[in-house]
Length: 160
Image (cartoon, rainbow, N blue to C red):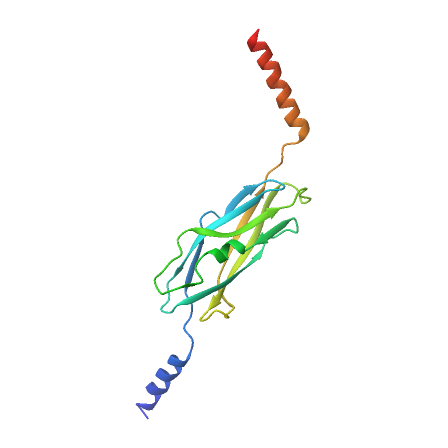
């Protein structure tokens, strides 16, 4: 009986799938943009675990209906990471800001979830995190015309 229990524990632990241990880091978790802009978040992934981990997708929740997330850049990175391997800094996802952006200027938090696992079909949650899109005002046409007129006046005075 003494040898049976450790044998059962050993067999059960061998049959259980290994836990993926992925470190997922954005290079900059806050980016700025204006209406009509598309901004790209970059970052890196590193496999701290003992098994190869397949990176099967990136789910995005941009945080506002005027922000549209696209994870297509993620798929240009590695499909999997072996133990102790990293991706280096790569484009991960883009956020497009609607024009006009009806919610107004300000800070809009969003979130992401990296999914994958032991094979190319696994959709386990591997890492989650947040990002922020800072929507800045777009210069109005009136403001730009005033700046242009002021520049012409200054140029005319300078040449006299």
